[in-house]
Image (tube, rainbow, N blue to C red):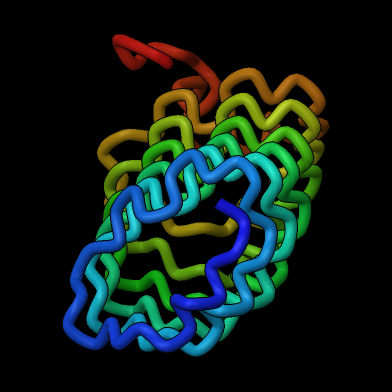
Length: 186
């Protein structure tokens, strides 16, 4: 799937879940038709762009109102061309609870500091959120995240071998944040 321009006119006002909508659309590169979508009623965007390996530009999503969203599991998982998360920096995630595998296997991610101001204080499930992001070098941007309600942080940064400051997170949250003690990994 390459051209999604016809979706620009969709009325999604009453849509609550967008799960798997563009899952494995490996040729998808242009999200601009989605820039004016009213996402205020959505509750789940799980796996919405999972496996969109050609996706690089998230600017069209920067003004999405996802403040009512609960589930972002696998949202950008395996988006291997994705390198800049800056357009997501102002997302209101204060009601979100599920972040499992959200950016896992995003091999071009180097810096996640644009996410530093995310309010993830209601988050409960962060397992493998950044796992296998093989070029990720620093967690300094998210060291102050409030994970006090987290139930699962296992392997949040598993196999992120280029991390220079992972010790800061290990000191704060324990070794589980890098271990694969989760029962299964895909």
